[in-house]
Length: 248
Image (tube, rainbow, N blue to C red; front, side):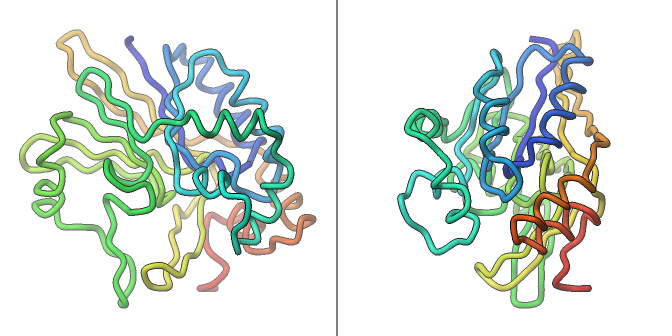
């Protein structure tokens, strides 16, 4: 394979996903790796599932929100919206998602290689969200033999080169550019843009991989309107602005 597209954190935003898949098709990617959290959102999880399940060359990683949908009940408002819409075929499909996947020096995970509900690049403290020190991150990833680690979960796209030669790439979010969370401390994550985000990994003749972050324009105003119609003002604001409403 010469080009691998990496998508993550669609969160039921079929409008953003459709635009991203069209962009990927134009760039002749050989494979798409979906890092997870695919349907968990108040826009159109069923249309999102149809797009993903119909794609012939896609590998799916289990996100923390994917795992939540395998539970019959959960206190989340989003779970209450999405879970009743899913049939047994869709739930069985989610159950096939992988914990991680590796290929030719590349490692793909949702959160970290060990936990899909933990941040890899970021740390959350009572004082807010901070990026981890590169030396600390390198020690954390020492057991991982792959040279490039792709992650999602935080919805914030970033590439970080570590002192020992490894690289960590957060693919950002296709369908939800900002959100707020209470664990482990109250915090927000913001990409700062309403564009749909994904990553391309290009294999060079020497065998190394070059990473390209891609931002795709789509009708985020329509996505925002649908979220608002479904009672989620928080999603609507984030989709339209790429920021969390909490701090505004």
